[in-house]
Length: 226
Image 1 (cartoon, one colour):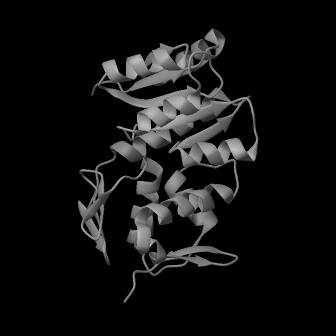
Image 2 (cartoon, helix red, strand yellow):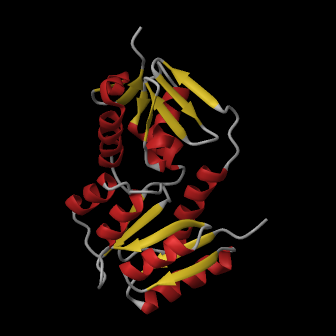
């Protein structure tokens, strides 16, 4: 089986080497970029990149701009790195379609574990190609969501969250259960992550966003209109 390729984008050479060493030892192929423009050049040139690790503060073009550009044409998984641990930065990252958000300093082993979790979820064979609930239909093989017959563009995390809701329709799901099931690792964060993704998902589903019901003090329940 061919190695999966990770693109590391960071203006600090020591950080790139640290992450590259850990990822290479784990069995991944690694590409590196020292600024945003170089990252986009590599992204458009290389067709087999599986995931991008993207720093926020960089010369030439920062991580936010790189993410915006990539999201115009691709749902490539993106892990955003930042030296700032402010809530507004984390929320901006999720709004732009970032799949994970990690504040520096961090454990390289934890980052590698998150890379593995994301790639495992995106590459696992699906047991059922099509799921349909109410006016929402999901083609898991093609990774396409249709709402009232029209395709809707979701990030990988939003797609996984919607599938999880649909597979558990009518069941009250706590935020902790959603984190454990969808994120698939010991998450070092809080409920804002779930709430941010649900808000974004509801918005993209339009009128069908009301399928996702808030259960105050617990979490959410997916229940199409009868």
